[in-house]
Image (cartoon, rainbow, N blue to C red; front, side):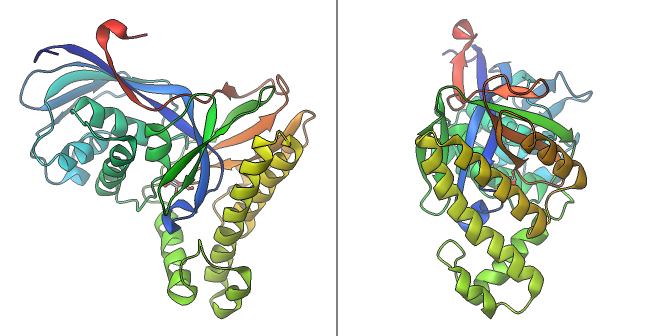
Length: 340
Ligand code: GLA
């Protein structure tokens, strides 16, 4: 490519089928990259990373030597600046435009998709794991939210037709085929942002539990009685049981035992509601309504919570509201002439 080549990079969103608030303890998650995308169309020129967005009034203009992404204005530029900062002055400069079909602030990882797309546009040349690790650091720097690796890794390492079982300790990604004859349906409930939410408090509670009983990914339920703080004990119990549910879900999904898989999703939601306090009354109603609908195997809130979306596993065509989403491959750099 020449210096002023036009380019397109494309990063999908993700929906998490099961395994929430486990990633930052090195636990298990089972998300899938979905056919909703953030695109950056651009041209390499200039001495900054300059982006407009179809969804935002104000443009972003970031110097390659940006040092404090968290104060960049407009605020959406912080994710861009967080990524640029991770290149330590070596990001390729370009002018471009962002567009997205991922609903913003809905728990489908619109920010992680923007980070991954930006990193590819800035010339990132490593593998999917290194890309995800760079973007996770960028997100933490940009937003102050101490997130795990699930969002960035599921977006970078998506596999068409498959969900991805991610071990957030060993950082291995195992594709799990989505059986034929099943729909994954996402329903939007309410906008939210994790910045300023209780997300950081949940991360701290898990760290407090681990200081007493060791890594939650290795802990057994009988250790819980050693934790005296009842809130910390509830948080730890969610994580230990959620890891088990993810393992079981991967097995039942692969075996096409959809009723059993759906029951695990409902149990996961109950745990996030009762033990982890990340659901909301609106999400609870949405999940209850879905779970009682004929043809629905199971449903749960998805992602960080405090709003966002719910996800359901259903017979084909069982629901008339929400979006059917399909598992797609990971983020990619596409030359303009090859653009879809
Ligand atoms: C957000 C974070 C992820 C993960 C989920 C909850 O999406 O970015 O790292 O912790 O919440 O599972």
